[in-house]
Image (tube, rainbow, N blue to C red; front, side, top):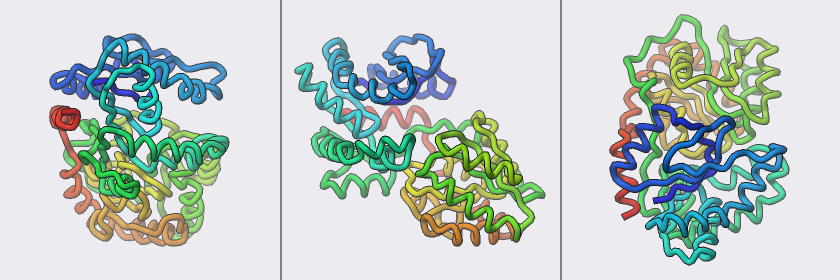
Length: 358
């Protein structure tokens, strides 16, 4: 099996990725084609493309060259199946299959709404290719040999194209730093945001909501993340919020322990890993009714759901939860009980992947 993705891997692999790929290699002969992080080393079974300079051209060069690079690997490896991280890699792989004349089956994973990446992520220049990207993605999903989704939301996106998912199961998440006995809520109420600072996460809406809520409660906002909207985090930090551009998984777990609630006001959301991390730490969620968030968060039980892009409703929810310890503790208890359906071992994930490929 050949994995094709735009993921930036750093070698040697982290312990969590080692466990994932050891489990996969117990079931399948696995090779990975992806991007390399700066300073990445070498490892058997990985073909990584180093970044192009200037960095602004890196994405364009990667996607233009992708069909030809995958075609070369198809000829060399003769895989039975190619698993593509998104519909865009699948479009390139379907072309590569034609170029190479190697009849490998193509499996597409759908982790979220593919249209988000050209409209609400990264440079605004991406919008110039959004129509073409939409057409290519839809064609790839319809022509692939199988489609795997990760949540009811992503399954619905695929079915809207007339395609029935071959399987639906979560991506493997290394949750080891988060699976320990939860701590009680701290004395001081804090709302925590963890995620990339991009338009699809609605960080601008979070800023508007916090500015409306902050004068009415004695609480703190903490932000963890980096991206093209760092200007929003910088402005909030000047106003008293705490901002960390990057934390390790263990540090994110500690940040959840220091918070009363996770806030996730996304305009779109695939399989929200941070939601499961919050559940494992026994922390409720204030989230938008967008993407897969309602698939995980039960309103009034494990969190509070608000209409997407409604900063007023988000402010009201922040005031309600951060101003009422009893409510925050009740949501925390419900969140802890909601984690189980989304947990899986590396071995369970590898078995499901083998069954999908078979």
